[in-house]
Length: 259
Length: 215
Image (tube, rainbow over all chains, first blue to last red; front, side):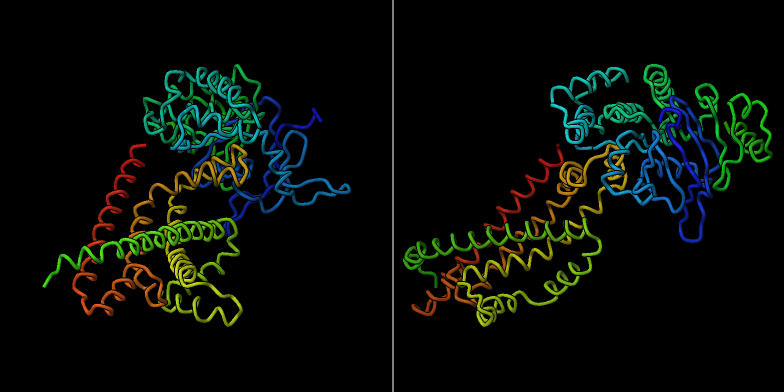
């Protein structure tokens, strides 16, 4: 099982009506690998994360997680569409952080971080709180644990959201343009936290980002998406230093000029 | 014109009837609020059942309450379901307003951003926990004012129960009138009672609202 990648997209397609968002995607993400997905808007990059989090159903193909199919399950040696129960079991290995934070506004930072551990993992309240306190401390928000999201800055909210996702002990973390909704001066504190969990936790990380500098410094691999396909992928040095594809060059020039 | 002695004479009778009115209102609204929530939740949980609920809601909202009261009291016994006047009346009022309340709850559910559902999925919360812990606590506070308006509207419609001779305020006032040929005092007192109770309820709802907003 351990020679299987942590995540495998096998001929995965996603269509909305006549519009093909992802066209027969094949992508493996290794254990502990940090992969950045870049590309113009509408290239399907966010859809990749949303399908993996099961927020979008796939139309074709099979999604594998940690050596097991997630969208399907094995029955008499054949892959059949997965039941909700099966999906929930596999989904427990994945955590996600959203562009718009999506904290629960009626719960404190602490409340946000213990809700799922208590109701899903069946943790005792004291245990969940202890662990949540550790995580809030790691993201630098010990002092804010009793604050409601509306009392926190965007950067602080996003750091709570990261702690909340980590509280479920995922093996895979998905970051969907997590700094795009932030004021520029708050981007740094969130990237700092992502760097830290990349170092301290044994996590597979997949991020959609517009922060080219961060993608370059942080990732093991960068995938450039264009019109629902991986147009080019490679090490940050290759993609940013010597892109082979014309589209990649154009995109990077446009982004770097704007930045 | 106004006889104070007579007024004080009929006050105890009217007070008893007032209790009946308040009881009918409370029970009717409990039914309305609960059944309304159940209807809206069914529509939320099973979109396929939504059509049935929509038809039911439209049917109830598009016919007069008085007809529904008559239906429960006079027609249901033909099907072997015999309800006493108070039960039939309260049930009719409750179900009638449940249809309105279900639309209020629906608006409340629709108001919860999609991201809240998505975060719940990402945290692997069960559908029930998502509903109970995440969606409901965010959907309810904004709709409290609208529910409060329906409480007051329901309260003001309880005199319709006099049509099936429930001894609530209006029926009692009518009885007093037909026995004594004096309508001024009983009907005025009933009007004042409704005015005072409506204002008090509106005040309580406003307090509840500001308390919910402060949280």
